Image 1 (spheres, one colour):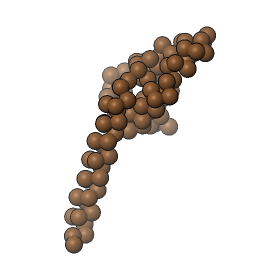
Image 2 (cartoon, helix red, strand yellow):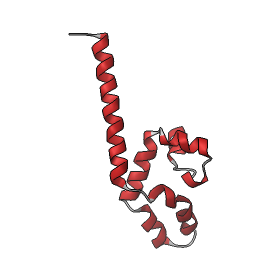
Image 3 (spheres, one colour):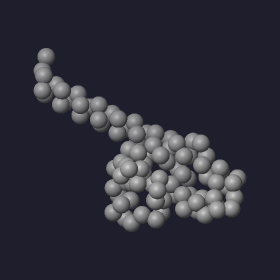
Image 4 (tube, helix red, strand yellow):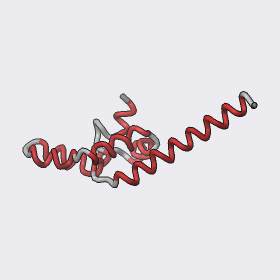
Length: 96
């Protein structure tokens, strides 16, 4: 649940205080949540439904109005860092 909270799923990023927004930038779930929301056009779905969905639309506009390519590069960089750190840790523990 903390990952989804910091990803912006429950509280839009626009409503978070600066410290929480900084912490959310460190959580991979945020980048995944934003990218998936942008890819399936969540904002378009909110607009089509109208009514109370438009209130939700305004709150999550900043969350889903993103460049998916940039987010994918951020996730790829995180994956490469994790793989490199794992390789270094395993080589240090069990050298060939």
